[in-house]
Image (cartoon, rainbow, N blue to C red; front, top):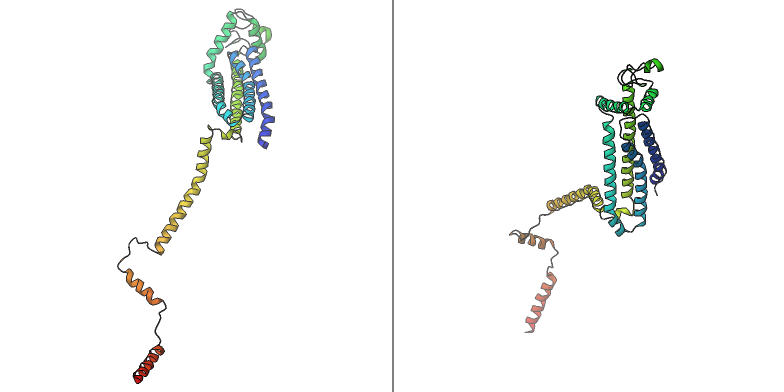
Length: 288
């Protein structure tokens, strides 16, 4: 096990627990301040780090204990799980962004939420907002402030001199930003875990990963192949420059052969043998 994997196994669970705590804090603030962020969105964000950690542990244990054929069968379900989580994170991120930007578009949602509290006569929720930010009313200190009245005596009783719109909108943006932060960090952790999983020794033999490995190896060997082809081309050109290859002998080849013959050592008949023959001929003539 590499040092990176050891650090990931140690820091990963702690980071996921920290993200769960951040999402839980955002959920409590959304509920307490009656923010117009769906509580279901906050709950889904709370579950997201736990779901990611659990699925990562299960996937890692299955791939380490299974054989190569079993890994091939597990590939499609694992891809489906990862795809579902990516869709999950995309939805959380998109909905969180709608409660951050643009700021002017948030006023309508905040107004609707405040009026629902007023119509429901939920003085405790309005009082919690006013006491948390030390404000009265929605746009002005007299705008549907608690205690109810025409005009409301909120500013006279609590001595609050500002309305709640700006600070309440800022609270919505901050808590939606926390949900967005959790979703983005979980996505980054998932990408790192998938890369670590694909780089494992047992998983790299899967037939789903093999094409990517072949493409990577081919890209790495391509410069070396180009060098080999260049060397072969250079050797062929040098051979052609040294001696021209001919398929059929030309008419000038016989003289060249004769020149080669002249260069070879020749056997010359000795003059002594010729003289000896002359003496032998003379002797034979005297006998006769």
